[in-house]
Image 1 (cartoon, rainbow, N blue to C red):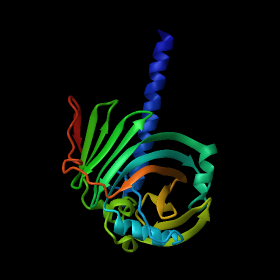
Image 2 (cartoon, one colour):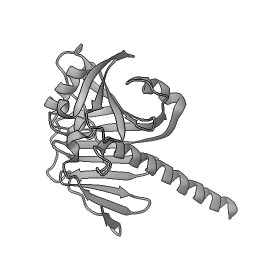
Image 3 (cartoon, one colour):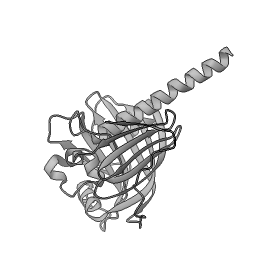
Image 4 (cartoon, one colour):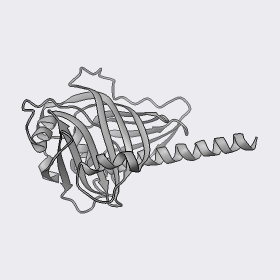
Length: 248
């Protein structure tokens, strides 16, 4: 009985840690201001020139990819400073928590970001509202997007093609065959210091979010399909049976 109780308690704590980490990552991705919503998404771009700089490949990605789906692995990383691409090398020895799942999106601002392992959690936007469903709690949090994509890291992935309005872009060199660039927000009222994005041969490989506390969230991507035909109801959220709904 004691062992069973301990197992249950440990699992509850682990679920809380995983979900908290996911929420923090999502908050970092979306937070243009302290009051902004949470969310995330990513996709693959095909760039004609395989030797284009990271900045050129990102601009092509934003311009060419209107929708995408694929898989992701997310790792929470402790990093002692450094620029884009350094966290990827540190991840193996400093990883705090790992989760994985699938995603799909369609510009502007519609997406499904689904954690599958180690526990299920769903973040979904229909372009007007963001829904976060925690399966273990069977609880849905709903809030308006209110245009927060404009100056947030999420705008890099599925917002409009005006990155330089909200970010300063610079190439960050090549590491292990990946062309990196860094984006620094022009707004001072943010919870992140910079965003790193890596491309290999025109394909998006990874994304790093560096928050103001020195933590790094590393996302890596695979099995990505660009511009697939998505059904009209792909991003319509349906509240799970019996779930509590909290309007934020």
